[in-house]
Length: 200
Ligand SMILES: Cc1cc2nc3c(=O)[nH]c(=O)nc-3n(C[C@H](O)[C@H](O)[C@H](O)COP(=O)(O)O)c2cc1C
Image (cartoon, rainbow, N blue to C red):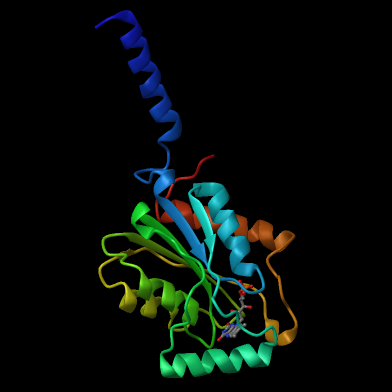
């Protein structure tokens, strides 16, 4: 083995140590996909992204929901009753990823229909799914059960859930300022617990 090759090998092993702190998750294979209307879940998605890297994708609908709160509540309730899966404008090639963070608010104590569409439309067998959630103070409802039902052959890690806004009461983006600092800390502990390393 010549000298240049030895140096190259040594350098490449150092480089692997520098960047290999994401446990087994290659940052190129991480997707963070989320649904957010008033940006609380988006803020959590960005906090996760800052720590783990990967690709960050917001789910958008072909036919956006109404701006009006009562109107969206009624439409979501009707979609939940009928099982309608709203078509997504966002297209993602999920085959490129092996670890997928999925972020959603609680809507009507259920998984929002657009996230049901996403999970229904993609083959996520064998992938690791990591759910995260914001809600108006009533918790996760049946969201995670629905993720399990729609993705029976994926590994689903422990969910992260925090209180976000409460549009009903005129509270839109709540995860900002000091509250955002708190959520950043909580995200860091959760990522450590589920053993997803950080870039720092
Ligand atoms: C249509 C709709 C239904 C909601 N239903 C619930 C609910 O059942 N329980 C709850 O705790 N919060 C509920 N919320 C409040 C959201 O979960 C909360 O504001 C969340 O932080 C919004 O996330 P976002 O800012 O990413 O859109 C609802 C909000 C909307 C718009």
